[in-house]
Image (cartoon, rainbow, N blue to C red; front, side, top):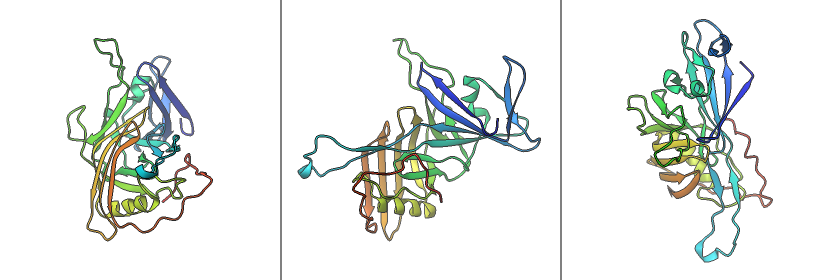
Length: 264
């Protein structure tokens, strides 16, 4: 399976995921195919790739809000890495690929752009992803949108955070227009999270974007406090405090490579 991509689309509850594999092989016969580590004694990795989880929306001052159309940029993908331990197999079915409870959440390879331009990942591997594997339809006939929630490993099923997050890759730079955060804000949040992690009091990923409740507090210099809430990838509250250094001027042509992920 290494080097291949499996796309999972389920219309009933809007599952939209790509899966890639490392040290994973397929075995079994039709109707009973399973995935497991290729090399005996060595864990394999299954990585789930989510569609864009956040949106950069143009911000304007109320006194100058004369534009009727606002500009937007989608984030790149977010990824969740899962380790398949030796002796463990995963059914090669839709529900099997979503059965993460039997797998080990991995720090390496988990990169969450749940805030546009800011790449966060778990500070420890002591966490779990909580979700259902089959569509859930209520008595009214409505089916819920599939989503997964990050939580400490010790919590009960369907409970959420808090979970500590750190910057895992250099933030995007050169945003094309003013937004809820500046380049300087993202850079200082990234650096400050290396000293004291950002707390995710809630973090949910879905096909319609992320729901986040993030908090960070630092001693400075520079940024000293950060609060961020969003629903469906759109910011509803964002408050960075402190004195970040000046951002470079935004480009005038609006060009940015949102599909690529910065390194570092």
